[in-house]
Length: 133
Image 1 (cartoon, rainbow, N blue to C red):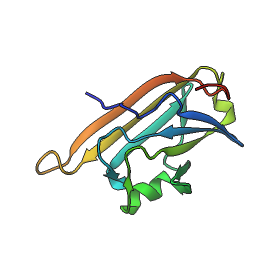
Image 2 (image 1 turned 90 degrees about the vertical axis):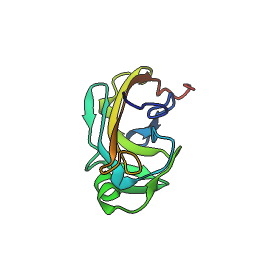
Image 3 (image 1 turned 180 degrees about the vertical axis):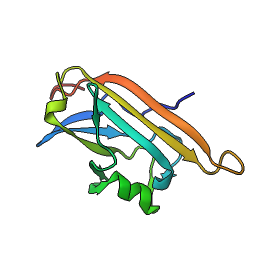
């Protein structure tokens, strides 16, 4: 079983000055520490988008996923978008963009001696044209 509720919403993809931005949201019912978000992957129209070294914006601050994950400080709040930059050439047709995202959520308060790992996965097509939504 994988959690996907709200992970990639219908309005997840929007245009940016230098391409696009995908907003990924925590598919869990409570905030989780950044260190518990593992193996975050993203692909747009079949092309992998770097998360480990890519540009990510959280709460208006540009960071790297590695810094969020390895820093061990802070939480990913419910409803707070993790915005990942996507180069313009990756999107083939803005009116029908296929987004695949996955992560492994390590839930420390579930699972007994070791955290329960919950997979999150979504594969959906969204519209990034300016009049969408």
